[in-house]
Length: 174
Image (cartoon, rainbow, N blue to C red; front, side, top):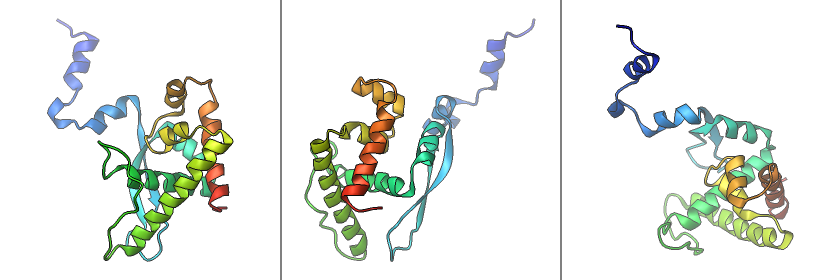
């Protein structure tokens, strides 16, 4: 008796225990490895290896160096503000850590200060900060960000570029 195509597929799948969550994601959102530069002088670590969705990689490849650096600084500031109390509320107090990582602490404080200026400027210039954060911080695709904001197609890309350009202009990145 011949096997059906479904039975053959079922037989070739690896056992569930051997798969990790990233393996399940690869089927619907394939990823590529990327290297993120860490622009902090005086630190030992100069780059970080991460995975990025292929569609996101195409978007990030279109950004200029200053826009990519702005996205990284927005991510670092948002993480510093929300990570210590992510399940409760955001904390805008500067990090209190001192010691061997004083330059890292200063970098984070600069990022948070620049983020606050950028958020105020977004409100003044009617740039949708939530869409920019959804893409840069939460890793949403452009389509998912547009659906969440209930906007037309192309709105997320325009908002992302406008938000990153505004960050560069406000904080004199380029």
